[in-house]
Image (cartoon, rainbow, N blue to C red):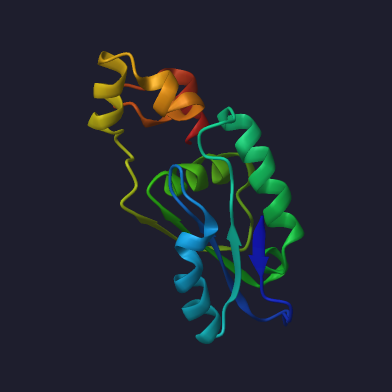
Length: 149
């Protein structure tokens, strides 16, 4: 479920890319290609954004990240789109690498999503948001806030 550049030198910089809710790494493939063209080692990692609980997703991401050549770079940058930014926050809260560079979040609902709140009010959240619901609400409990760091 991940896409990495095969050749990596110890002095290179890398970028970890995470897609958003309900997405797929194909959505970040163009950005991955352009970053590779600029000389970065890229790990474009897919994850099940709504089927698994947050802890399981973070374990999955961690295994994929540390197995990728991107993790061995001198500096690791991270880019998350929408919910991918929340996944990065949760991963960094548990596994922040010493060689972390910049973190970029594109359209990330750091304060939650009013659409998620509406789905809760309409009682549609189990069907649409599934496991991601608590992460996407504007009012998160203490455990969820702690998980996001």
